[in-house]
Amino acid sequence: MKTFAHALLLVLFSTLTTVASADPTYPNRAIRWVVPYPAGGGSDALARMIMPELSKRLGVPVVIENKPGAASAIAASEVARSAPDGYTILNADVGTLVYNPALFKKLSYDPAKDFRPVSLLIRLPTILVIGPGSPANSVKELFELVKAQPGKISYGSAGPGSPHAMAMELLKAKVGLDMVHVPYRGGALSLQDVASGQIPMTMTDFAGGGGMIKSGKVRPLAVATAKRMEQLPDVPTFEELGYPGIHAAVFTGIVVPAATPNDIVVKLQKGLQEAVAEPSVRARLVETGHEPIGGTAEQFAAFLQQETPSWHKLIKDLNLSLD
Image (cartoon, rainbow, N blue to C red; front, side, top):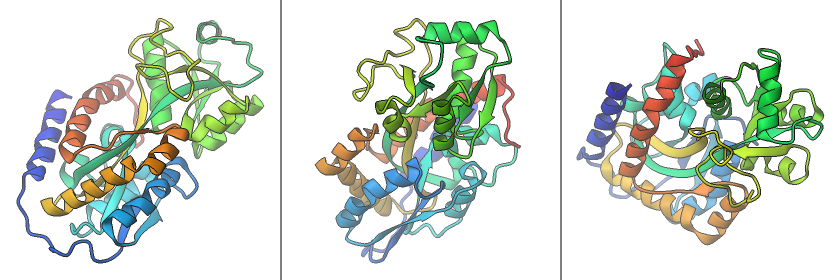
């Protein structure tokens, strides 16, 4: 795992220092922002929050194109093989860039070789939620119920290999829980069944589950982050409750084909940084549970190098696979 991470960092940083020529008039036509999930979902909503401001900053139209399927591999493969001219960018999350290389024995793209990082956009801490009719009133009581019935209590997720499913895998491994995974085609369906009592619990994020949390349709028990969320100040972290090491978040950034010239990457990064920092955009992001990040391509590369080893070890230790 250390070797993989080291190789990843070397490739990413080597591309960052590559000198290449580019069209000095870039951008002079529409940019295609590929989202590897369906329209109406969290990733799509995030892109559409930032897109108008990015378009304004770059002075050209930015068009969202949804290409769901194969745990984001369909969209990732297409963008990896597109022209490295800055006119096709990929909305890439932790699944696309970190989980998939370990979850798939055969993957149609290589995140370390096929992409250049441009900028992180946001981070979304995951939240453990239960239904309003659950007999558990705390994380401790919930875990006691699960441990009393090993292999019988289920949990939902947004789908196999999704950040929410992986957050539950981390939780199960850290606490020693034996549970049944019920994958759904999206987090909204999983939340609906938790609210109706069809399944006991799921991991969500505030962007996708905030409405149901605020309305009382589901109950948040703990957040998988180092500090409490601004939007849920009364909900403790797992760390506070005596369960260290349960840190899991959805992150999303922008990547481009590996051969994209430096000056194009810099222009895109600057536009994205300014778009995310624009006060009205930032306010919307925070209101919907996103933690705006931004940052340079180098910082994004370092972040990927930091995240990869521990998740790959967990996937290998649990023998998880999507093939």
